[in-house]
Picture 1 (cartoon, rainbow, N blue to C red):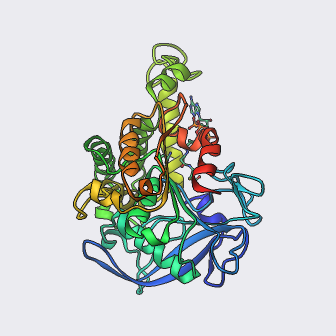
Picture 2: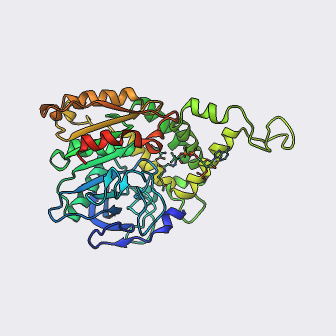
Picture 3: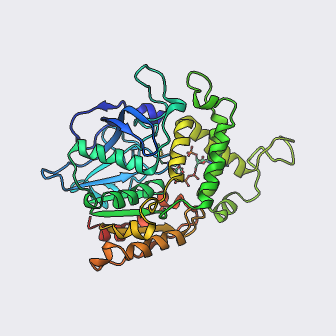
Length: 385
Ligand SMILES: CC(=O)SCCNC(=O)CCNC(=O)[C@H](O)C(C)(C)COP(=O)(O)OP(=O)(O)OC[C@H]1O[C@@H](n2cnc3c(N)ncnc32)[C@H](O)[C@@H]1OP(=O)(O)O
Ligand SMILES: N[C@@H](CCO)C(=O)O
């Protein structure tokens, strides 16, 4: 798989250290919400800053669908992370003050146990990896926190699928979350979000190399994963961005209507999507993509809790909600509704309204990665960072 996957050699167990390399901790056997069991689960994570003596300065950051533990550069891995500006000395999550923990999600492929991990007999789990929900991942993360001796997080922060997990943390463990930030994600996956996701999982499953999920040792279903990424990436970008950036321009040297490539030339936007597809296929495992996508489809904070209103009424954490104004996948209206429901929750009892913070970005959903700095002041203020 990838540079990022192989760049850091995981260090097993041991205490958290400042600015750690990728580490893994076992959380032991794990029973999944809808059935299925793994005899041992290891969670990979990176950390920044130092956990204080009473372990009260911990902040949990949760990644999006294809994200990793690498939120920001560390001494061990100087590659910039996906929220580089957020974490570090003098940054909003000031690591002189806060201990930041970023785990790889259960089922992922950045060090945590997932379908490409080996069973006790040395074979990849593949198709036998259990169906995983957002709640499973949150429970696994809580077990990691137990192992690290963190009883309560000062804040749990996530965007997109990380936002779904952050919200689940606040609803499942109100006593363990003092503040929560849900960015570019609503209270449940909508019919349209599930529909986009299903077309991606179908593309992977229909790849001739998929082999029912047991493709390890043979060619990987990279074609299907690439199509999944193309579909996803279109939803991560706005129509206006694609039009303004690429329009109808041909990829240089590849004019679909003329010389030198008379046929088979690509529009620039096609070349761009091909690039995004190839890049993901080189760094991500297709089975992990399926497991995590289906976990995101399961996101519904009200499920089994008497509905969203009842579930969110139990949230006691200070709550920060943000959306990207041009997001056509996680619509700002859905975040607005979440903010409204959280305003009616326990936070309200403490006199705290929960407004929606808008990130102004022309690019769409991915604005939560590229333009988060616009809401740093409000994030810091709300979460008392
Ligand atoms: C382990 C991890 O890194 S995962 C965590 C972070 N990543 C993610 O969560 C998702 C993956 N990344 C992304 O979605 C995006 O790259 C973002 C949101 C982080 C950044 O977006 P942007 O800065 O707008 O970059 P954008 O998505 O437009 O892509 C630029 C790439 O497209 C390429 N590109 C642009 N136009 C074309 C074209 N016509 N043909 C081919 N390629 C093109 C650029 O060369 C560049 O390539 P590179 O990324 O290999 O350097
Ligand atoms: N670009 C992000 C968007 C998902 O929310 C990712 O791939 O994880």
